Amino acid sequence: MNRVFIHILYYGYSFFQFLVRPVTVGVRIVLIRSGQVLLIRHSYIKGWYLPGGGLKRGETLEAAARREALEEAGANLGQVSLMGIYSKLERVKSDHNAVFVCTDFQWEDKHDAEVAEVKFFPLTALPEDLRAGQRRRIEEYTRGQTGLSFGLW
View 1 (tube, rainbow, N blue to C red):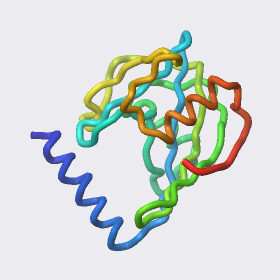
View 2: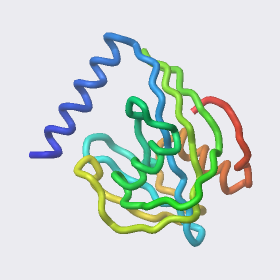
View 3: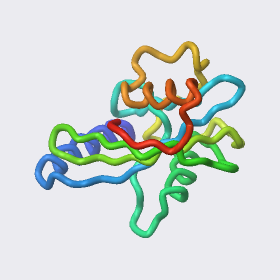
View 4: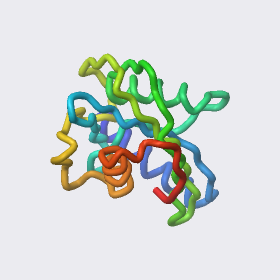
């Protein structure tokens, strides 16, 4: 029942975005351990994602990354570095994401109700249904492109 409610909220929010055409700011976190990346699968939308989400009012980018990593993946982050800021300018909104990298984290397999599954994947064997922009960020990480960059999501 909880997942149905979250699914309805997701599509209701999508309709709201269509009406008001917002500019959104969010975060994603590339969590790396032993040559593997931690990904999540939401209960209300298909595909695998990097943990992350939107900022709350009065919250810094780093604070949002730490909160989202804990809520969605059960990861308490140590030192993080900013990989880049990326924009997704399609449909009716302007979506901007700060992507952080963290290799120093404690992980417990706990997450909130919006997440159906949390799993580590080898960097050389990412799932086929990983979202394209997030696949690009992981591939940039594996190529050593971890300095600050800007671009399209």
